[in-house]
Image (tube, rainbow, N blue to C red; front, top):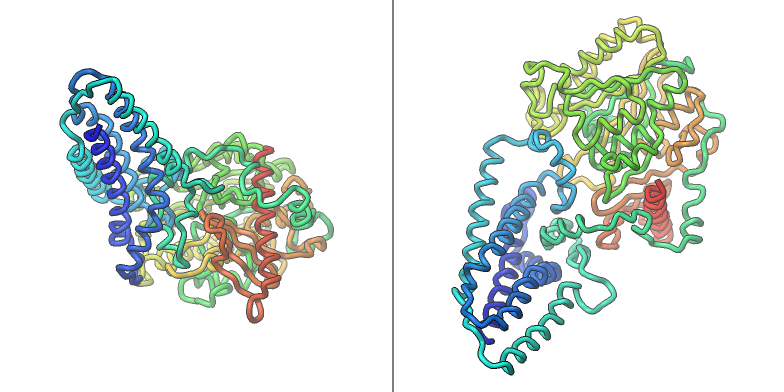
Length: 615
């Protein structure tokens, strides 16, 4: 009996030690640039991380415990180390893969490993486009080496063999004791005896988001996200239905009444350019910075520039749905990856097609990435141009596909070949994305230089188009698919605070629009200009309508949401259940105004999950 208990205790402590030491490795390898953390910080991360390390260890020790109970009744010597090795290989491999994947992805994602990774396994080529073959090879080698080390540790704490137990009383006593040990094990797996079970928010202890992330067990994060029930309507139930309705009603009131006229025509040809990661920090009208996007800045002084347009989300798949379907984004779901849901959404192309438009889409990358083609086809884009439509030579300079100079040139050709209108083309740029290697050199820092390159391509495209017959009846709408975390210390509000630009011969005159809005308001606002009904766009608002009486912006990211109105903005953590950012437009934040923003944000989050659940 002692031999079996000694094995289980040693195995438990070894597994727990593996997860604890991973915290130190994470803080050593993935420490943010310029950050300084003390030994005390590392100890705090390890201590708080135990709240998730213990449940994961409990899961992993459950099978050995059952095996130990069964072994009591086997009347011969058991070659335990040999028998257990198969299980240890699985544990070591899974733990190694998850840990190394977490270390590798965190610098890109800024959140811990979870089921998001499976969104990219359908297109592994694209998932690896931002990194070199050497990068991948090194990590595969580390996975193998670390996995081998873990396997050695687990085998080392395991006796070569278990001796058979003699006597019925001894066997019964050992069995009862080990069954009794299962009770605290179940409690540890649950996360304690309190009302709340083990969850990621339990390890959050610091105002520093990185330290909270460092405390999260990547295995728990992955398994928890995989196991999440897809009862969307049950998620984020902050309020009872009557209170939710009271807080939510009127926030997205219909906006189909009179609108300010911005265009010379009600049937322009429409080009929508979704600019990859083109955040407000690169645009003079938002940040005041002039050097990165001089062409965009110049065009902003000619057309209609929206200076308080907030991106809904943080990823292309989510932002594209927000921009084209006028649908909010979700912190835990990508609607584009849920075709049974996304096909129920309205789409700009379908709305325009119903009024005689022909709709096309162009992107220099893989159109099947994150289920994009399914979404676009269902949404009404009959003609799609993607990476396979460009030559190998045109795609050789960027791992994602054809660079922006190539695709802007193809877009120009598409416009020239359209013939009689009306027509609509949506174009998603590509080059302002990791690894930020572009055939252009104006700025020393390669990140803003990549955005300067896209801006350069845009400027040349517009100037060529301006001289063509297509310009007179053309509306070009430029907006980012999402923002970008540059520099690395910007706030969530700054990350999502972007812009939208309308230019072209169809635009009447220059105008600066400072009204608070989301990128998801673009469809209703555009359709309002074309006098096309848009009531099916439940969450999209015509910001020029006389019924748009409470301007606000709402955005989500992996671990929270933000809400901005005329009183200020508040960012709320849905895992930590704490306010992360709070700012008043004038002076110190008011507790009452902050509470209003938080509750309205919660009501929106609850309502959009309810809506998704109904679809």
